[in-house]
Length: 125
Image (cartoon, rainbow, N blue to C red; front, side, top):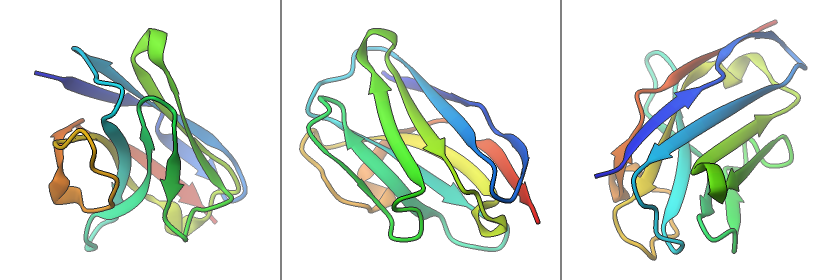
């Protein structure tokens, strides 16, 4: 059983930066994919980006590519989402998740098994 806890959310002005953390308890296999998703009020959950826990690759939604970067610290069992050049449309609850399949490399939220509780990010204009 893996538990995920996000932190680092808050209120920031447009153009600013935030770094979110996702701390995992339990064993994480190197080939698993960990992802970030977000959900704004009245909207469906949206894929943000993901990283293979081994660090072999990462990939992002077009809406955040070039602005957001995912990294991980294996020693701390923690994944990070560095968000730069934030826009008001980035406002959402951000959640981290771990894929159910060790070799999943997609963007479908239903393929992710373990989820954190989410952290609110609000970007003011």
